[in-house]
Length: 130
Image 1 (cartoon, rainbow, N blue to C red):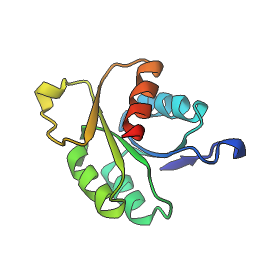
Image 2: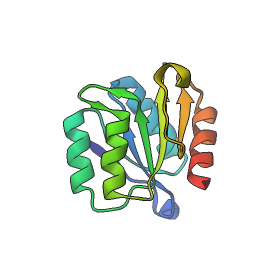
Image 3: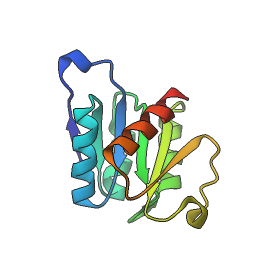
Image 4: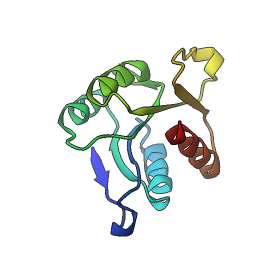
């Protein structure tokens, strides 16, 4: 698990918990988000995610999670995160279509993989604005 801090001039940026088990995707997504000014906390395993949710002192504004992760489903992670941070926004991402995985949470957004950096940023901005 790692935390990437944004420059001081961007301290009002949202804090994002990125749950992604694929290392290259996690690094790419982290780079995109930090370059956009977000503070990013990452986790790649169920154990890291559970520890992060229980020990993270600052509130998380957005949970960006893969729908299917080893050892924990995205929906289970959302449940854990919302118990800790009731107002957290959720953006699921997956290589499967929303129809195939049937995300039923009305207040969660979905982003189909693969996506471009601009698609990711637009979806994050839209999700945070809700």
